[in-house]
Length: 198
Image 1: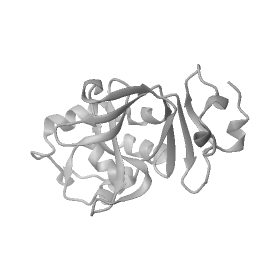
Image 2: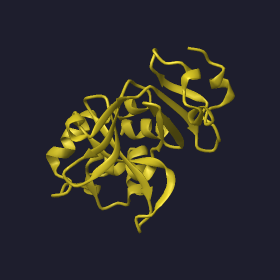
Image 3: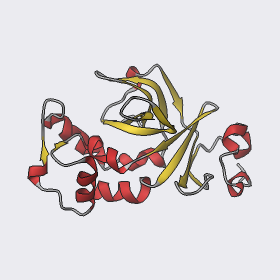
């Protein structure tokens, strides 16, 4: 599964800082969330599903559909799943309080074709366990009408999870300047990025 390989090489093990309207959120894309983004049901653990997808060893008996994960929804997701990596390096909108039939996500990233819904990382008791957001749902739709607010993403920065500061610009609105970033965002950036102009 090509998208699993791209997810692994471009997204897993990295943190992404999305800057919009003078605010910023940090997002991580985890291996255990990949299966849910595909829209299928499985009798494998989320981690095993991901490993098998990477190794191209998924078997038909591992994948099935249910009322929670219907076939037509999965097929709809599969048409855009190959574009999932667009949410780390392309022009996007940040949606706030994105409502679905079953849940309200604090944020959503959309390119008008697909939306990745984000929520805080919580443990099984519902306690927030980090200061980053995680990808919880993948929707093939324009979700503007489902959100309370929509803002242009002005920057996307990236770093490896084992480093302290963001050292890579994945996307930058050409109208923006690094020196105009809020001080709280600048503190998260590597000095080499702060020396970039315009």
